[in-house]
Length: 538
Image (cartoon, rainbow, N blue to C red; front, side):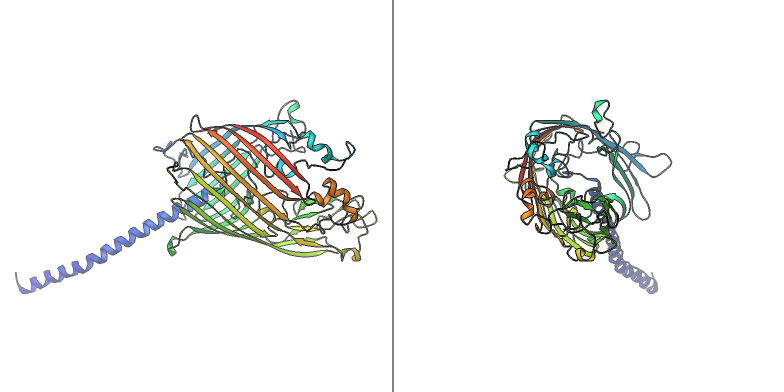
């Protein structure tokens, strides 16, 4: 071989030696990109999976073990491929019968029968212990304590039906989810009043309805401020106090995994349907989506104005609560092999009290939340044992500390009387401070038998003067929990349960629940309830 040929071979060999590390590096970079992409997708999917979770979703069993095959090629467990498309669909739900027995503090006349024992249910209206003698029939609270003993209730209204789809696209996975239960019945809805006299005609209620494309979500889902992964598992439909809200709220949200910046977890931001939630001694708790409210017919302690028979809108007053901008939230969700942590914040910039005439006040609410769960694996305990918690604080946070009797603003507007500029000058309105928290422990006795012990608190600092519970004319409201004196300032719950899975998709459980209520005038009420459940998932 000539010198020229030898040089050529040498040059090619040298080029190959130089190119090999470059090619290897490029291949490694590509592998890292694919790995990061997969990690981002898995993280995004886990964050999106929270959207339709309810209490204790992380701590409850997810099914009957590993899924090894998918029906008809569906892309996720228990799904199948719609013929002629790339879309996988799953139809699921649960038939659930709940039986409740109140030893005390129960609702003797609910219509339809309630199974919501804790938050957003009976907890917030537990009969108060009245300490002064009152004529029978003169005050509901005076007889409520005795009538609340030994109350039995049962219903299948917590049963659910859901449809979920997932479709691969160039923009990431597109997903839809819709779920109904039968909790829509009220005394004013079809089948609501006296429904069990002939047939229990329960009414469907939309729980979830949202779609996603990559990190974008629009529709009705759990608030971005909430963290269902840290909710304790309870049988009680209402759950514990001290959990972040809002449960199921229309919103637009965007989620970004942080792995590209070498940070753990994902950041999500949302704009959520607003509500200005208000309380007054005259009208109780109302909100911007309540509608018109009947005007008081006589003097109300601490309240100032409203249209009278000689004023504007005689007989009713225009609801002054108004929302002018969406509630804004941000959350940082960090999953780990041992559990997760979640930080979230909310600002409510569009709260307003505006009667269109003499009163126009603007307010901003805010709040923060820290939650998470950890599987401690202490002292040889089962690996699935779990501790979960929430801590929430805010001013004007209102419904974002989950309770239907929470509110952001307390005011002395309105009451019977002249509707004048002079009386409008005396209108008082203040944002209110709330804090709360929850702690829960789950223990697995066996793979199909578990127990949960948990408790929560919701404390609300309410200005008693603005609420109309200060002054010589308030003696009777204080003694009976009427008007602003009956606004809830502290709610406490505790649960202990045992849940058995005879087969993976069936829950049989029993639970003891304790609830405590304290109002502005410091009257208190308690409930002690035994709850049982039989649920079959499909």
